[in-house]
Structure formats: C-alpha cells, structure tokens
Image 1 (cartoon, rainbow, N blue to C red):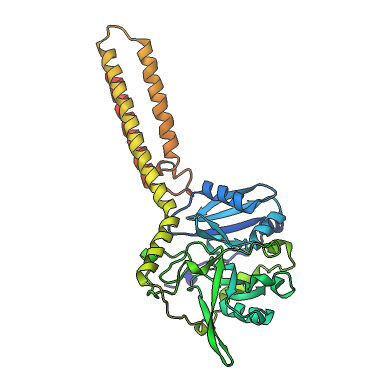
Image 2 (spheres, rainbow, N blue to C red):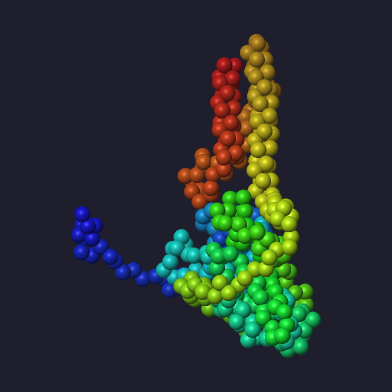
Length: 394
C-alpha cells in the first residue's frame, strides 16, 4: 500500500531555522573528513591541526563519525584562513573541509572534492602563461586559479606553472601530457601535487590503499614523483587567505554537479623504471604512512598484555593476603588496608579502560569502541569478581 495514502493530510511541516544560530555556525564551523582506511583519534587530530593551522584563537574538535570531525572556531578569521589554505594532511591522510550548509545534516555533506596546488613541470619558459595555466586548470579540475608570481618577474627562476584547482578525489590523479611543438620533438610535461599525502600507486586515487585496491593496475604511471613541495620563496607560499582570491561556498557544490570530460586528453609515456622497483617504493611509502595504525594496534596489544600481568600479580597478592587473614586468629588491619588499596587501584584502572570500550557506549555513543579496550575491560571485570570472591571467603 502506498505510504502517501496512509500519511495524514498535514504530514509535512514547514519549519524555519534560527538565523542567528545559522549565521554563527556557517561562519565559525567546518566539518572535516580524513581520507584514511584506519581510524584517527580525536586528540591526535586536535594536536596535529593546532600545530599546522597556528590559529590566533583556540578551536574545538567534536567527533561526528569515523574520521569525520567538526571544527568550531572562535572567530571568522581563523575559519577563513584554515579553509582557504587547504589542503591539510592528518597522519598522511587528506583532510577535506566543508563549510556548514544551512538546512543540511552533517551526514549529507559530501567529501569528494578538495582544493590543491598543482605544479606543471617541463614547459618551455615562453609557455609559462596565464592562458596556458587556465587551460591546464580546466583539464585538471574545476575553478582554476593561476599563481601570478611567474608572470610579473618575481619568480622567473621557478620554471613551472602553479595552478589552484579543485580535484575530484574519486578519480585517478593526472600524471601529465604531451606537448606538440612545431619542427621540434614532443615533450612530456609532468603534474606534481603539493601536500598530496597518501595515494594509491596502483590506481592513483587519493586515500586508496594499493593492498586493498580493486581497480586495474597501471604499471609505472603513479609513484612518489607526483608529490611536490610548495615553493620556498616567500611570495609563493603566501596563503590565499591574505590574497584577493576568495572562492565562494558554492565551489564544491558546483564542482560536484559537473564532470570533467577532458581527462582523456592526458596520456602517459612508457615507464623506463623496472616494475619491481615501483612495487618496492609502493611498499615502503604505504608502510611509512600505515605505521600509525600498526603502531596503535601494537601498543594496544602491549597494553593488554601488561594489564593482564599487572592484574594477575594483584590477584596473587590478594590471594596471599586472603589466606593469611583466614589463618589469623584476629583481623590484621594492615592487611585489610593493603587489600583496600589494591581494590581502589583495580577500580580506577577499570574506569580508565572502559572509557574507550563498549561498556560506556550508551553514555558516549559517538566514540567508537575498540576491541583491545573491550578485552581489557572484560578482564578487569573478571579480576574484580575474583577479588570479591576471595574477600568474601576470607
């Protein structure tokens, strides 16, 4: 049966948003998603973001979903600086920032587009023009902005174009293109991406891991040579937040509505590097970035072992004290005080461990549970049960 027929006549209700709250949230809040396969802790995000952003005032970080956080700033100046100086990387993963959109739920925000500075290397010096920069920007992504330092005599020694574009991270990175020259051989021109972070050397997609990649491999096409450092000259590294270029909030939305049909113009030269060398570089690069997750898991397992040994020692001591109390003709208050101290220690450790386990998930539903923390919490509960049993028997 049609649900519309079952609904009452006035099922839809028109509600009005609070303009003051909307204005405050729109100008001071950003929602960011870290494109990584493994989860990132909120405290790490706060620490790394504070170091990179260097905001004039403090900001808060709230957990929204897995690797998705809301950043609340105290002023519009810091909000604008962080948004316009993107992209940012958190533990190697691209942080995509989206302004708050009035009327939208946080789960409805899209995180498929991110701004990048792209360097174009290999062009003859007379090809370093704004017109060519705009053409290449339209091929790379949407809403191109060309860094003008190379055209006014301030950075002629740079010898490459620098283009600000918004890229669709669900598509492979573009490596470069051939340039045809009259009465001269064709030359290969390379694209290099600043603050690129983790990307798959197999398919060329940002945030994808080559070990779990389901896309067909393209040998020798993607590698660390696609990464670039920002120019060291002070004029080039000036942030967009202090320039006259201010993209509107509709930039990402408009980019999502259109697809780039010019990507087929980009071809790739045959690779002269052995395939095994590429795989070795892929392994080392992803092992370096993936070490954060491996180290985190290893540390939790070590904590599980250490907590187990520590708690077992406590239980053994309590068993010895309990046997002495059972054999003694009168209670020894000193032994009882030691038992109370052990009990307090075990309870405090249990509370600390359960802060990240499923036991407190009902009180903190937005904090994801952790398997190792769950095991440690169950172990502590079991030890406390044994402790009470020994205390009762004594």
